[in-house]
Amino acid sequence: MNLNIKLAVIAAAVALAACGKKEEVATEQVIKIGHVGPTSGGIAHLGKDNENGAKMAIEELNAAKLMIDGKPVKFELLAEDDAADPKQGTAAATKLVDAKVNGVIGHLNSGTTIPASQIYNDAGIPQISPSATNPKYTRQGYAGAFRMVADDVHLGGTLGKYAVETLQAKKVAVIDDRTAYGQGVADEFEKGAKAAGAEVVGREFTNDKATDFNAILTTLKAKKPDVVFFGGMDAVAGPMIRQMKQLGINAKFMGGDGICSSELPKLAGDGMSDEQVYCAEAGGVEGEQKAGMDKFRADFKAKFGADVQVYAPYVYDAVHVMAKAMVNANSADPVKYLPALKAIEHKGVTGNIAFDEKGDIKNGALTLMTYKGGERTSLAVIR
Image (tube, rainbow, N blue to C red):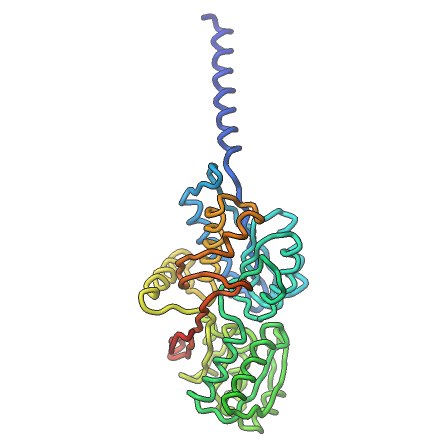
């Protein structure tokens, strides 16, 4: 064989191999999962916590080498920052729709989740929020809207009842940050406390970026509440707790899952005393399921060098639930896997996951918590 023929044979073999590789790559299906949370601003620690939960799940799915419709799949995370701002949230949603994501996990806040949900619905893209608790989200009639946790009716009402029946509060004061989440959970707390027999001696409001609460706290101090409830997030609750101490307000402080983070003791500084703060995390495991959650928390800390704040396990489970629905439907096409998502049954680190006809989690749990020695302590899991 002369040199020219040898070179031609080698070139043909290389070309054939290259074609084979291209064909192999072409058969791999890329599935885009969007995630949106506030990774900048006052509650960036919560948004990053969520995003890290999504990253863990995506890495596990890719390591599992799943097949859908006879093709290997690669999951790709498209992460966006909404800064807990409704306008930025809708911009992030539009960006994900334009990127043709197969599904969305998010948003974190009700105030961003609700306006973004219309954009996803119009595009026919399923959305699972790991943490939005305002009831309106799943009551808009959107077929693709799901939530991983109990809503404000359950959460706020349970806390209102707990304030009266367990903490023996006769007079309560209520503050909210005017967001969809904060106002919603505060309204439900107020209803629950009144129904249990408490007197609401004051209702004040602030905003989700405020740091000075002396005026509203001074007004409430004169009314001598046994409990001050705040509807909002930990970045605002921390300074509020500090200022309560400075003003000599000895009331218990309560809030929903927005304040129930591992970061709250740092944000409150020396303003927080043991068993002064009570909150409820939307979700919770007990019995045999606790071992799975403990392992998740340990794995999360080993991977990211940080404790789970609140919602990362729910994001992690939401990604796995969406992927499982795709596998069950043998398709990543939203139209085809949506029925499988509606019918899903999944054992996750946050418990058994299934959705009702509205898209709400079935048999949603709440974990009542307090703080001792700067650490969260679980009091009870309530369903």
